[in-house]
Amino acid sequence: MYKCSFTIDQNVIFKEALPKKGIVSSNPERSLRLSNSLLDNPTVEIQSWGVGIITGNIKNGHANEEFFFAYVPMGASGSAHAFHEIFAAGAEEVIRFGSNDVWVKEKDMSSLVLVSESKGLRGISWDHGYDEKDVDTSLFPDDELNYRIIESCNRSDFLYSERVCFNVDDYHAYLYPDKMENFSRIQSRLEMYNKYAPYCRDMETASLFLKARQFGKKSASVLQNVFKQKKESPYEGSTGDHAKENEIRIAQIVINALIG
Image (tube, rainbow, N blue to C red; front, side, top):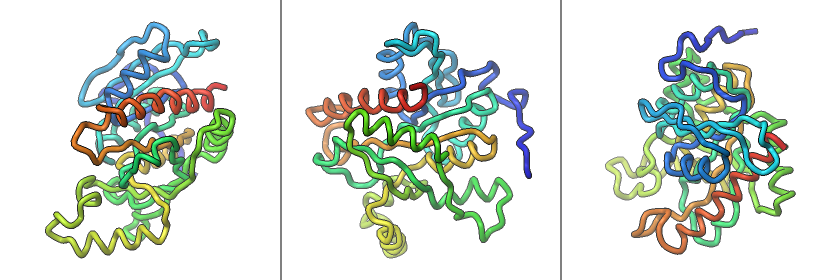
């Protein structure tokens, strides 16, 4: 069986050991909001190459529990680089807190998506040395960690659904296929995705699952339903306020799954 031989010595960004557990996002503002709200004495350890790490101790009864919030670049390749170094630096359980890249309606905002399987990671899989026939092989979260998230959702009475997630590298192409040059090709892919409906899309979950498997660590992914298709930015206006309220609730659910 393959055993990962990478260590922190090969890292470019992370040169010091990290806490064993943490939450990662591709939204820097989310990571900063949550670390300021949920950590005692949050300390920004790294801000480099689009990556940030904030460490501290969890508030409210977990004073001795070291924890980190991280933000990583958008997309599979940039996030995979960061995930690789996060695991090499000592992280053992990492949960991605992202947002669902399909069309989200206001009625969806009070629920979250728990990724049960991720498909379509092509470039990174190829660079990992996968055979061409295997580059679309499904990737999965850790079963036990996933179950802990489900239990935490149930305890918090927060609605969730488990869904297949398709990795995409062009966010706008799949939201607005009619504006693309090769509309018919993208539409045919969307029709294939719809065979798994209700499904979800994002740009980072698959690379997290791949890197966790490479290092033999635990990972999972939750996607918040954020209302993005509007004139305001996603976190402005009444729906933005609602998103930030749910953001804190979801983060607490994730923390409880990680540390009890």
